[in-house]
Image 1: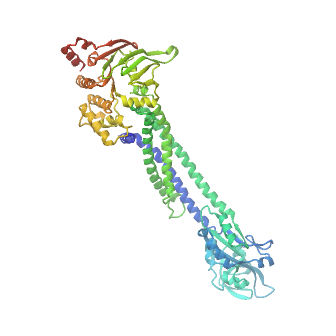
Image 2: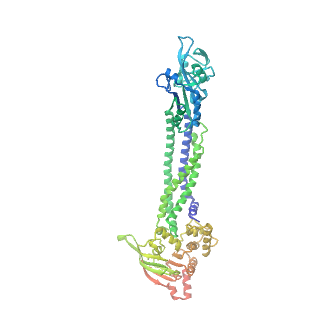
Length: 390
Length: 245
């Protein structure tokens, strides 16, 4: 028999008190695990939703003029015409260090076109050529009456359709070429409402800009995205372009994540404090109850450190058990309550080694930390006085 | 030089007007292998003296030397080591740890030693057998009689083979039969060369000792042979043992 055995035997034969300390600790750990696990799951879900907000990096040609603009893109006539981005240069984005974070790259060609047959009635409009596949990622909020434009078809923004009197199934003449209208974009409240859309290749041909793009939208798919790093990396491969992070989206993501974590950690700290008080009070009561026993230990030759070790061994064993039980209970409670906090189905807490480790570390820190003072008190007991307590 | 020496041991509690002297400048020496009984009425300082001899208490003044070690010049940890290596304690109320079996209680003094579990178990079994409790190793204290608990306490005091045994009213809570067995056990240990200091109320039990120290109001008022042994008549001693037992 050694000091650890004494601690273990005491726990086994004083199950009621051990269970009380264990429950106090386990509830604290379970609360932490459930809250942090929920926060993590919800954060992932929110991140996933935020990704759907679309592009968060914008690549435009360098321009010094302020003129017709589209989300910061300078369409300043001569200068704009002379500074397009070569489409083939965009392949370099696939090779940047953070290429795995790139969810979609949406090249966009823009240019003014003449709409209408009769010269006096013709109107100027802005034509945008888009990569439809990328647009589904970059513009998930787009809803179309009709269909996406097929080759040699055109789609109209909501405002453009109203002004030009366009509807799905009609034909429209662009730069002297008659094209069917495949669909009309529902109102988005953005500048997209005033545009005409074609497939990228068709628009490049119509505008005479084969192999060129006017701007590129990039969706960076990641949590706490290193957007600034990605901006630098893209700038290196596109030296003639201006690469900008759309800070509001990124900052918004980070802020949301930060709020969730702060809430979870705050509540966890509060519960940990309560748990430590439960352990402290119970252990102090336990020591007081065992005064005579500690007197016997001291009388038969236990040093103060030996008495401390017996108490801390008990705390350690209880903390390990509470860490495990609290983690399992917290995961169960979190999984059961997840549907109450999240939208839709399929959200899961999942196994995070750092959360399991954190639960164990928290249990040990709270259990051992709260037992240090009772252990010290036990070790400081005067053996003569302790024996008189019997 | 004597094995155990108390020089002007004094213990007071409180201070100023509330100062109470529990033990006043007591001096005596004990040779190795002596069986000393300490007697006196309640409040005479017997238990205080035993706690000082057990290095459990700190004297207000005086010196206590065992085997050349000045005990109260030692630090707390060294005093604990002294208790573990030199002393075995037998308390009046047994003081067994309730959640440990008899064998585990006996093994307690070995818990801090670097020794294999099997070795500790063997020593505990041997000590329990010596006090007649072989086969009851796994029982809890509340599953055996008072006499068996006291004998377990004696086994615990013997398990690490200390040279000195300190006993505080070892038969105080026992009936005649169990008292007799415990006293015979202590007498046997004394006969084997163990130094024993036993506090007792009972003159009859003191008759088992080889020497009697008498205390009154914290002062040593007598140091000699136990009264019944002065007669040195076997029949009288047997009578005394019967009464104690």
